[in-house]
Image (cartoon, rainbow over all chains, first blue to last red):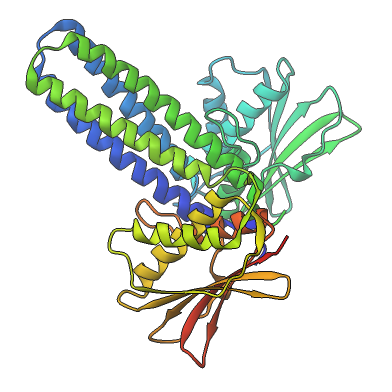
Length: 218
Length: 218
């Protein structure tokens, strides 16, 4: 037994079970607040009960979201224009609050790819969110092009100093309040399940972090 | 990166942080119920609020207990009679509900050991609880003896068929409702922190599972 590491499958089963158990308890509390609402007429008390319900449901939703990161990734892939994925990326960017500045470069032709668009959308948003958080103010470049039988999506993110992404994307990378370092890991799993290669590297000549998704043309 | 396993330290940090976050939310809900109690006069509503508080505190306590399994083990060791540990084991047994039948064999002399008695108590209880759960009805034997410079505590548990304990005691071994397979792992960590060797083996000649704790005489 190597006491120093735990198989991903066991950690995932634990998180799914534990969040399920806590959500059961929250659900039972939610039912109790429903009961309570019928018993109470006082306005202030009613407001307080509503506030509790809102909190209970918010915690339950957070647990559900967390658990979803520990489920098997099951993409629903279908053929689509590679360009539609780039469009999706732009839409995700437009919908962001405090969206970073992005230069969009579309060098695609009419290539088609097999993909679960919703998973790509999540990954695109994760990459933009990380860029906004860790390179605030930097103007990003998102490009899409074709090389041989591959469609290549790239996010270029200027960095003030070199970074080493080699250890990024490990599950539970860092644990801070409400955030458990699962984002990049989930992104990698999503892309792998879609048959896409996801890599990150630091390019010394441009001083940029390059996040690259490579997907085969069908 | 080996995606298939996660360092224990990262999993532990995650569980501590996550249970802390959820407990924060539960605490805020608890405060809301306090507020609500002052606003409500109806008896049925008051009872309902009390029931919610009880549930909230019970979940918070479960989270605290779970988190404690993921903290560093810090024994408070002090010199004591080896026999006092055996006495502790008997006390833990007496306090059990549906305690299994145990034959006690004390072959100790006046040896002293360095130990955190509360940790040994927890481990003794864990072993008895497991024996009661997995070998119901079997009469157990607990013995304590000295060999050279070692004090040896042994629990013998007759098994209906051979068992292979070699993979037992891994963290998050199994996840069922409310139970996440941390018991034996925690026991092993406690014993290691006390400088004691904890092993389990199946003895073919007697058909018994033998759980053994070896502690140096001081």
